[in-house]
Length: 280
Image 1 (cartoon, rainbow, N blue to C red):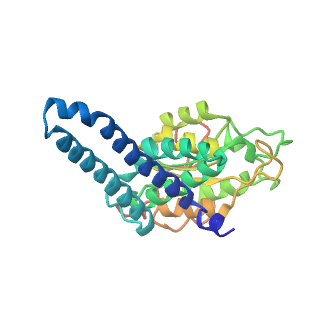
Image 2 (cartoon, helix red, strand yellow):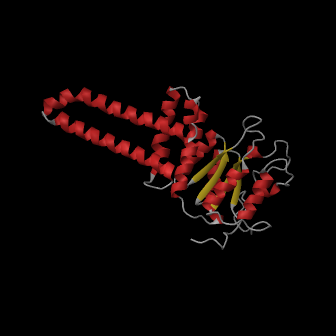
């Protein structure tokens, strides 16, 4: 039980990445051991030179890993850590996790926590009309006749699901909002709206894929709750969504009442022009 508590959140991802770094060191050592006799035949000092080079490479990798972990905990962008985490550490951690029998969703959820930490170290102020709230269609009540994937304004705000609350939040902050049925539509919305930052709600699998595909756009992921199973009548913690929005907007005060101005291209988004009170 103690180990489970220790490896909650991003700690699991850090642990698996650490194992990957250790295995890399063992692989380099084994490779050097195998080739050093032949290197010695070429030049007597060559095994020593290659060994020093391998050691320097490994120490650089270890140092980079330590700096990435420190960045996530102290919330300061010591290096550009997100690219390495997304492109290298996540595939490595996933592979090791599968070998250890850890469920994929646990690894993905931990990666999302790590990503969110790193995003919060490096992101700058985003104007309201350059922030996209991207939602899955399964948040809408399954039996609702008013489909909102093509047009979010079709929502009747009946309160049977959280789409109405999210629309109100969208209007209050003056941000864009889109509801996607899958990865293809989500990618198209991102291309058409060209956001500078994204707050995305989805399951572990979709969030992980979206974070990877959206790079270098910063994405804060919020996991949905699935009381009825996947892809049907899912829920989301509205306070977490608003917290992510407030972070990107530097906690700007929401607009008082009424929807934001319209005039953006109609690609299933809600929101309007940026809040003029924002300061660069």
